[in-house]
Length: 105
Image 1: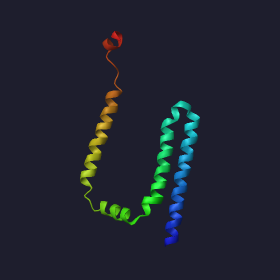
Image 2 (image 1 turned 90 degrees about the vertical axis):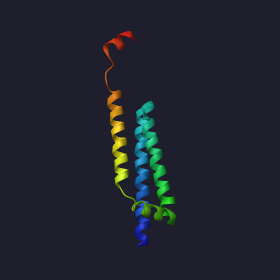
Image 3 (image 1 turned 60 degrees about the horizontal axis):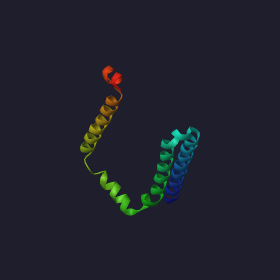
């Protein structure tokens, strides 16, 4: 069983590094607009490093298992409210300006 865990970890980390490499290639091809892809690549690397280091520690496993015992309804409600706020914000920012304010500018 331990051998499978090690193989799964190395496969996960290899997948993270592959995703980071692809993100960096896209960033390079996009030029000045590639910054979000660079950020995604660095976050992918950080996730792989965290999984390889902190993810194997016993206190993290206990914390992660303890989080599964928490009720999910408050988290789902908070996520619903946050998603609604983000959607509303995007909807508001996409509205066209009034004709009078466009002429005055």
